Length: 326
Ligand code: UFG
Image (spheres, protein in one colour):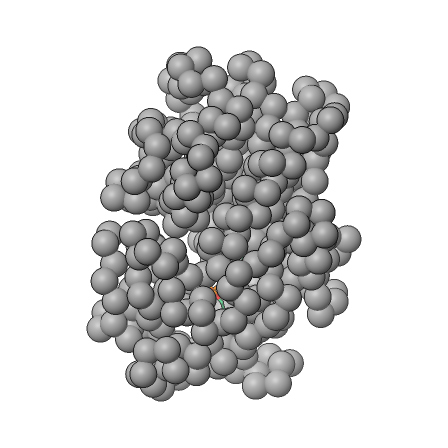
């Protein structure tokens, strides 16, 4: 298929491009490099532009005749979304409307959308499946849920078929180390720890030590970036085989939770360097435990995550962070 990868210069988007190319698909990356990296665009063609530029967007759709579109171009930092919600509604909703309009005009009817565990809000069960109530507690989660709802409405109205993939905690890097995670500033736990171990002057503290968890720190479900991408590839095939228009959503996680302290220990084991971190007050909007029930993705898509051990996920991330290329 010829696939438009919006946000293909970002962390997950770049991994997707590599996997799509290796699977024989043709790729066009659309990115404005607001957070992505030129050096990450190593597969396919590049169109450097913003989604809000409707004229150029039309020209790109006219030029390539896409079979499907994937969207990775969201802003995704929970705390920032609380401070600047309109940025999140502009980037994650308005710009997606602009993209969906272009798809509609050019009759591109397959869409894979990056969604998030943040659509669920405070968890009401230990393992979060697709039936769990959606009640986001921050503008980031709300912006992603808004798009999910729009996609549902687009099924019967325009015949658009889409799959929303709700990531839990994306982590790791491609084992080739050609691409990896590089946010500025970095806010995520694993890359912050590894960059600190690699010698960067990054302050890392444990956000909250009094959570109702066995060791008092937050539990998360870390899932390897390439496993997220393999789910996208399966979703693409599913959309191709789908007889009539549809919207589906799948939770993507390993179903295994690790506390912040367990991650710090695992990082020490991989890198051979122990970090002594102090405990700060909890970060606003952090639920105690977020762990996926990923069984629907496995049953319906045939998804088989390869990186089920946290040590393997951290190992690939460490290979990247020892010598990041960008
Ligand atoms: N943490 C620390 N210290 C740090 C950074 C993080 O203790 O310096 C903790 C957090 O409190 C959290 C865990 O490490 O308990 C993981 O935090 P990350 O920032 O790595 O990831 P989040 O769980 O905050 O974010 C993820 C996704 C978001 C999604 C969110 C849902 O990246 O897209 O889960 O809550 F919205």
